[in-house]
Each structure stands twice: as structure tokens, then as C-alpha cells.
Length: 265
Image: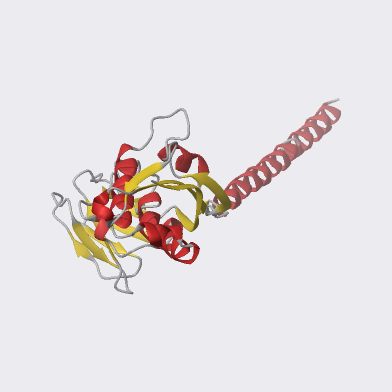
């Protein structure tokens, strides 16, 4: 009886030694699973984020330059003759809705600065033209080309980032155009040029041009591109924590000016 009892004890001991084996297998499976999960997560994190697509110019669009016809005095005849002129513009733009808003052709408030500059420009151009010149078809076409060259920088001024106008700053960096912005020679498209901002070192660079150092109180800082083009910037509202790149340039191209009503009185 004792021998049988010892044999049963030995068998039970052997069975007990083999019991932990399934636990090892389970641990191995769990380990592999965790490795795969962590590996998949690392792979996802390693995938570079796709850059945001660069906006493209849309158009061409045709829009009146003002709700009402422009009335300007002509040269000669003691200034008694004047020209009533309805003008339309053919253009390309990143955002046509903003152009219509600027022209006062939507429910939103019009851009008073643009309207003032447009009227002033037309008065100066017309003051050099006589009745005979504006009534001659060939000279009238030359006049419209002159109008196009003078109006394009008004309709599509240099802007920074998402500001969409010269009166407001870029929402990300706080940069805005400087006081002498109308004298800038940079007239490239908005997403063709960029400003590199280093707020820590207090430097700005236009494209790959030379660095321009600033203190932070400049309202008319001149920054130059490698080609010698320059733009004026106001850095007084620059976010002290911003380091990065900001687009700078114009938001459209004016291709042609069309005349609607032409009346000389």
C-alpha cells in the first residue's frame, strides 16, 4: 500500500511540474501582441504629416470696380469737361469673395481705403487727358492700360499670411505690413514668397535673402529678397513666441480693364 501511495505522489508531482507550461505560452503570446501594437503605433507616428495644399489662383473673373460710375474732370477747356466712366476688371484671385467685399459689392462693409485710393488715382490719371484723347478709340485703349497698371497694386496690395488686407495683422504671427508698404517693390504672388521669423534671435528673412534684425518697436522695417525686392513690415504686434514661416505677397492679378459706359460732358 505504501508503495502505491508513493507512486501516486510521484505522478502528482510530475503533473504539477508540467502545469506552468501553458502560462509561459500565454505570456509569450501577450508579449508578441504588445510588441505588434507598439510597433504599429510607432509606425503611425513615424509617417510624416502631409503638407497643406498651396492655394491656387482661380478665375478669370469679371467685376465692376465700383457700384457707381466714376466721374472725373478732364484736362483743358478750363476743367469744364468731365468724364463719366464705368469700369470693370478682369482678374485672377485666391478668394473672389474677398475681392467683391473689398469693392463693396456684397452685404459686408466696403473697403473705404480702397475706394478712396481708386477715386484719387482716377482723378490724377484723367487730369492729364483731354476730351479728344478719351474720345479717340486708340488713345482710349492706351488710357485703360494705364489705368490697369495704376489700379492693380490697389486691388491686390501686398499682404501677410491670412490678413487679406493691409489694415489687419496675420492671425498666427501678428505681423502686418509697414507704413511704407505702397513703396514696396515685392509684387509676387502670396504663396510664392515667405518670411522666416525668428522671435528668439529677433531676425526676419524674406525668402533666402539677408537677415534683418529688429528690436520689436519698428513700424516700417525693410526686409529684402535675394533678388533685391523689398517689403516694409510692422513688427510691433509680433507674437514673441512665434518662430516659423509666413506667406507674403499679393492675392491676385489684374489682367485687363474694360470700359462700360463712357460719357464726356
